[in-house]
Length: 106
Image 1 (tube, rainbow, N blue to C red):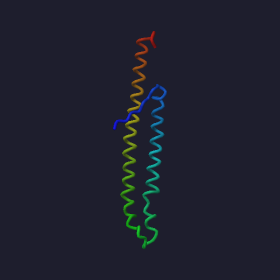
Image 2 (image 1 turned 120 degrees about the horizontal axis):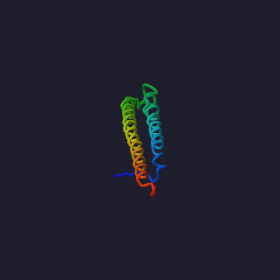
Image 3 (image 1 turned 45 degrees about the vertical axis):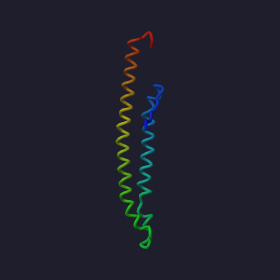
């Protein structure tokens, strides 16, 4: 499935990195919440007789998986953001060069 982000104006293009930062922060908050609250052993170990106790062991690999996915996303998103920023600068520079070459039209 192809997905497209449409940027219709220079203002939108300049604002895109900040929007990407907000999304990265939200994803980081979700990952932090999952690691801190969802992947907890203590909810499955309230007593030695708790029938859910075996599930406590599953929380360690779940936590590790959430942390790994969070790092993957952060790294990939940082590279994508850097590419968007570089493309924005390149497009702006190209627009400036074209405008300078055709001053009567710009």
